Image (cartoon, rainbow, N blue to C red):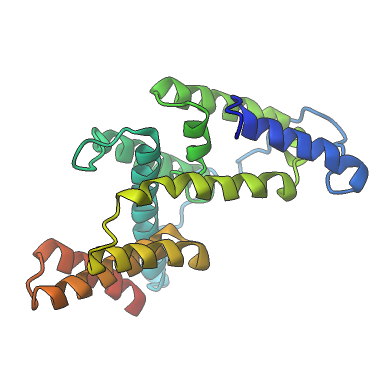
Length: 244
């Protein structure tokens, strides 16, 4: 990455995996190709009756929806900022399309019986290697589809090879903080808490929640209670989530 080599992260993962073979960190698979595991047991295995026999499931559904929404929003803004795709006001053009794609993937994933599908912050690695257009996304999607048939080879990669990449992703995502006005206590403290809580709580949503609530409180103190209604509503929703 320091020498601007394209695919440097992928080369690093592959090299670490190979070096780990004699050390016992990684192991050679029995084969390179395998047929993907079937989804017969999970496809359309929907239990609508459980919504009424187990009312507490509504809390789980709302929590997942809340986390998915703000994880996606936070990741989109962060990755788009790294790619230089935000406008002068810091807004993401055509964000509706990105959110629609994410929501459709979540719905389809649920019907197939997969874990929650969302936008991943690891996308910053693609941006760091020069990915900027929709063709990058299509290429990655095609490679993911192809990877289904190379499960043994993918499982060969140890966590020790991918963990450093995640650290670099965090470093990439730190670049936009230079645009934060730390001279403004409300903005600076809220941003600091957001950055601090995300890794400690292992959640983008938790960091956003703490940051927005802190920002609302500090702004209310600065302006003697005069805070925008949308900001108050958003803070109330975050607080309500913790109470539920």
